[in-house]
Length: 470
Image 1 (tube, rainbow, N blue to C red):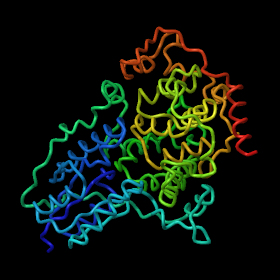
Image 2 (image 1 turned 90 degrees about the vertical axis):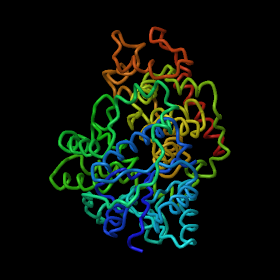
Image 3 (image 1 turned 120 degrees about the vertical axis):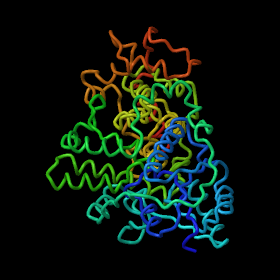
Image 4 (image 1 turned 180 degrees about the vertical axis):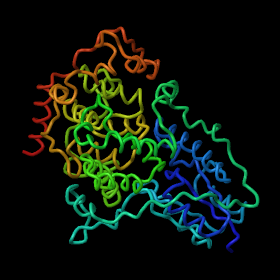
């Protein structure tokens, strides 16, 4: 039934260019019904990523409208919504791009099995990654547990050229009814923070391409060194767009590869960072427990503390360690956090404060607009010592020595901490506009004393590590 509609179930693939799903759907010649579902899995997202996803939906709806299509919004369990829309429209197929986190895999597997059993063409496509996780194997047929061999295995693998954007999507004779996206209130949990963080967002495919072009032209050559300096705009910023599929990894890879062939000094380092994301998904696919439990089970008995008062000071950027607090406040103001800073705050929480990495993982999942399930999980387990290819537990980042190396002029700290600056920056002051009023924070209050002496905190962590291994 080539005239029966296809439902295109959109999730984290909010782009027209380099979309295998759209390319194949247009090639089919069938009427297409793009669909977004606010299902329980999406409802469960943290405040910032859920809000940012809603903004991405709105922007992509405009992009579809520009090529004669539209985005249908429905709320409810995915299978229930899909079956209802199939009955309404006479659709004979449901297609989507794959996701790889455990909750999405469980949902999508069930949806596919049920729809196929009912004679519906249920089909999933690649597109969220450069390589499907099961396609990269060691020489003995297993999966990689260490990054460097993984990088060596994929660095020369061909990556297909990005697919062109369709000029139009065939429309159905009648469009189904749609919910009002605004009525979903996907940003409700952001409260007043949305007004602060929103200023720093770059939403949609056009902004993603603009970001990539600017980065390649102006920042890529010095990326290898500048990426470690939190006060320097030395990174691409593309994590925001990549996590929602507003740009494909293949499109980024192609630009980076061309630059590397042209002699850009930082290009290979940039490509390695893109593959670090691939490695995280590779591990999440093969060991899905990485998202919620110690990757190395021998860490299950380690005496990390559960949530505690010190962790709450950490969350609020009030530890008394300026590098740590600047990073936490950066996240509240911009929705993102510099990668070097992420390592510092994770090490401080799990080692100096001896608090379980899951406390930090959950806070990032609530606050980061570029939250990614695989990268977040691997990053926290890497920093804590419980994960694959991890920094050994006894490698404890000292925030004081780290700032000497990576923020020697205190530019980053002054940018985000009003209490230590003679003339606080707008960024530092906006933190107090973003946080919950219930915290009762005031930029005129004295900056707090350190929660823990760094030397004593290190000794305590090493003693716990030694006891575990004795």
